[in-house]
Length: 467
Image 1 (cartoon, helix red, strand yellow):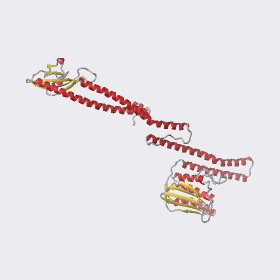
Image 2 (cartoon, rainbow, N blue to C red; image 1 turned 135 degrees about the horizontal axis):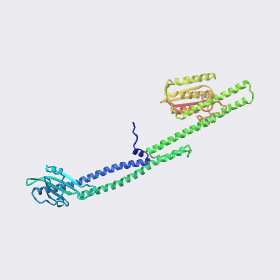
Image 3 (cartoon, rainbow, N blue to C red; image 1 turned 45 degrees about the horizontal axis):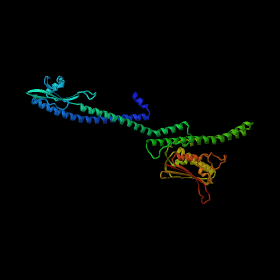
Image 4 (cartoon, helix red, strand yellow; image 1 turned 60 degrees about the vertical axis):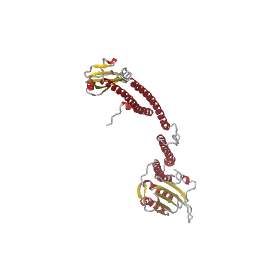
């Protein structure tokens, strides 16, 4: 079971990205500065303590020698303290200021009487107090009696140096933390400025403030960081959105352009039929005309939907299929139609297995054969070749060929060699062929065949797709 985030984490997550980055930098720098300051403080404290312990040990040795030899206790360093106790804790000799004060606790006295060396600090570094000492006590035998000798030196200079060091470290760390936070803030703002610019551009597109189809975000071309790659990704998304909108507009324009004619004809036929009484033969003729236009509407709608489906980026489902399975079924029905017109249909291919999507390639081949039957003359030749992982499929005839001014627009939607509306077809066949080729990652090409020995020319359309 996932635990809900705590209030601090929730509050942190609600901060702006810049605020979170600055806070993260500040926390990280605080840890680094604390660690560095602690290391510096520890090294300086160790050095000062080592020097203080050396001075205390030297003074302790001097006191031990004086007590052992029955001499007067030396004064020692400035502010130092000395005291001699018996094993019962009575003060035998002492510095004047500490004659009535026992520097050792009962437990420490017992430990020193048994031969242990006792070390202890009197007073703390903070808060500031007077009389801070570091003492050292050991056992000495004088005149056959055990004595406890206590030596203590002032810690004032050592503590003052450490307090000054703490203040300087705190001041330097604070300045460093402020500088790092400011640099982090400026860096985060500079790094996220392109993101904000991208957001403003995307918001303008979403709000319709800029309706230009070529809207793009300004992305530097001389950089390749994460923000720049984000900009390129957003531009690709905008291109996809623009292409999708263009396809939608094209579909609406195409549908309204081509559906208007058959619907108008159907409405005219029905208006004439309803205008006056008609004979049964006239009504039958009207129904046949309406049926023909309805079939044309269905065919047109199906082709438009196929084009939209291919243009929307649907991935083709490539499956292994032999060329005879791909072509024989499609070509058989058109061969029968060609023979009825006294023409021939020849198909040449090898028995190779290719990886294509027959759902789309078979209708494309059928469209090319239908165009050759309707608009061409003479023999129809289907030539299929595979080479270096590519499939080349060409359909040619011996008709008059394409008008020269039509070839550059042969694969445009609703582009027909004859502009007359009475010409069969809607001008979508070659557009569908080109869409099928593009969906397979290939191309379609239309050309006129040079005159042959018989004097016949003709037209050829070739699909070239990877297989």
